[in-house]
Picture 1: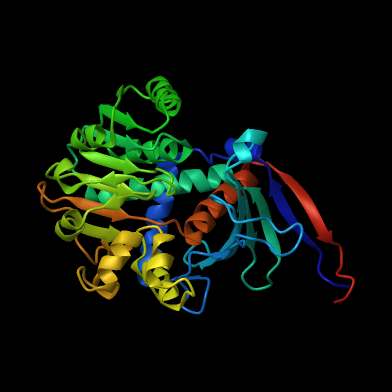
Picture 2: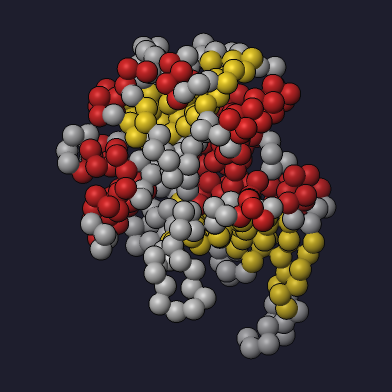
Length: 374
């Protein structure tokens, strides 16, 4: 007889009951994950062990019926990782994305996560991952605030008023204990109003709608950028206050003067090196490939030598683990550049899975009582 294999299925309501929306807890879990990252106790995809994920690029002009045509945010992607320490788990986040989805009552991206036993490869859990992904994305800036932002920070600029910046604000508030006010900027007026209504009803914050990105940036100690990479968002050096902390979760065009004067910290410099290496291998050419990559404008400056190589870059894990200093001067301006990593999903997914088990949540689904061919 072979071994019986079962796994736990967790729906979105199960995930909510298990605490997936608890950003303060997620910040602590990701802080722990970043320390493991600094120590090297992880593996992500690709031969370098640091790939963000593998993505299907659809053709602009499909030659066969049924193949989707390339379009804004039209993709499928698999993000895989192993995380060590107490986690000792492998996992994958898989998602499809289409900017047309909201017209059909769906989120832009639909995500699922799988956790697997490291030794056998058996599935342990399959879970709805839209909220998992959003909260872990927003909690990474929370870790950035913990180590990089001034403790006296009172105003946060929200650039892009979508669900991801909601999650970012949750993570920021978990760490920015003196935050009193937010300034919201979005190209869609209705989105800005909706964000303000949510923020003021959820937190005791003053919230104002800004007429421009510039207005929101100039007023802020902390700036959370989670705008779509499809736009042409520009942020200029002269807009940013002395001592400000910019949390770059989305994408924007930052001018060279800012990038060469700010202290830059990455979620994982090795992953950004993988982006740069991939761009050099791309049939599109380096410039065109980096235009499709988050932080492409920064990577171009690294590639041409204007900024130091990524081998000398500071990762937030090194700061969390005590190998590098975080903020030591209230006048320094910090840029925390993130891109989202599958180890984020694995860490937070494993934590929620364990909480769900303790609470008796989810459905146990059978793969087999005994494998047919074993």
